Length: 344
Length: 248
View 1 (cartoon, rainbow over the protein chains, first blue to last red):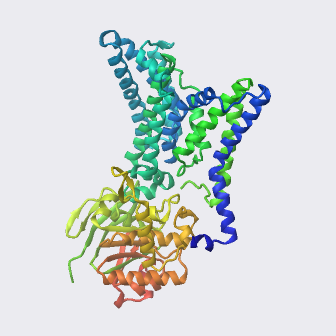
View 2 (cartoon, rainbow over the protein chains, first blue to last red):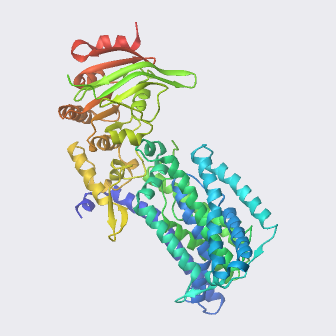
View 3 (cartoon, rainbow over the protein chains, first blue to last red):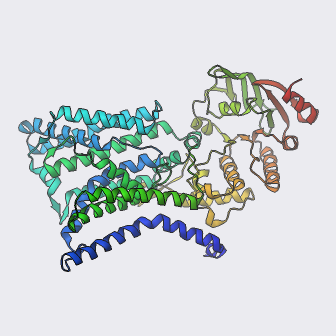
């Protein structure tokens, strides 16, 4: 490579630093796995953490729902926004799905029942998605405020419709979605991999993805280049809400109940996955693969600490600390690449 | 002389209570370079943003290629054949050179034979070509970096490259040489001359009277939102232009 030879010593160092900053989350994940492996082996007389298929499966299941929320959140954050409502939109969708299934299954049977339930879960998310998108793209409400409002509204509506408690559902197909396996792979993981794969393709390969980055990089420039910024922004909040709907289907299926508070702890996890994955909260950068790594890191911390029998509250401390560290890494990275994060 | 490609008539623009442009008219012919001059706040940038679809005029009409047009957004304006180099460059700083040249018009290819995907290799190749035509040298390894890592002059070159790549019939240049060193400024002046020879109409905004006199055919001077005067370059001089700019 002739271009490699043209690099000065300084440029080579800078490039190395940049690559390190971009891949630190991979190293961190590996370091975490090694830590828990050693920890588990010392604590349980040589019992392996990672070579135990049950653990791997559990970590993947742990990661699935936050990852679905995080994948939608990735689009929103890259565009320079944030969606604080995803957790309770998940709860709202879970409640509607359960209610519809309880209501229709006696007349339609379980198969039609679950199909209508899934449609209900996805359809109901379009309402908060559209409202979020319209508030932010048309009425210039700051994303933080608009989606924080929706956080409250979705929470209240979900509890109202659920009558203040959870809505249990019994359906064999539903149980299969939540707890079944195909060729030994749990169905929730298959669904998550497919959805996240499609979103990865859209973000990295299509014009839609490119416009998302352009809007996050320079909104005015995107608009002057002829990108329909307002419509595009609206669609991003719809994607985020739909991801919450898909996550709601998996949640309802795993626990055979629609719970209004289902997504409560997941908001932090979804944002953390995106940020740990290398996205900047100032917009313009981030990838779905990064978010996958971020979600895995969180799941490994949460599951690993349980596995080595540490008090569960340490999970919050550990995940919180990792979020702060990853934002610090993002700041250093931007110093290296010369981006001042001036929002203009 | 041929019919004007752009005719702006009686343009008025208000921002709240402020009258930014008052009854401004201007026309540009194919192959003609019209300089737009005026002090800061005279309304130059507002006028070109109205022509390029960023703002809409409060009153007045725009005719392009003989037809009355209503430019509601930048997409329509670019599709009609008008490209703009903005003073702030309007680059997406997080994207690379190719992505900026093709911003909003990314070429597509088929991935796996079916799925539409952006053709990044094509964008990169074309960006290389247009920069080479401009005699701008950006090291190969920097072409795939975000443009925020480029120098001010290189970034300006990217903005210029984007505007000329699309073979526009009208090119609007708002301070295209502001971030450039003297040799690059010369290149832009040469570029304008060669575009003029290929019959492109150009609206050229600059603070540099020497540049204006070097490339323009005509100069229109704005003062406090009004057209203070219009002169053929061959029939005026710097003193007169400055007088028009400051009044009196």
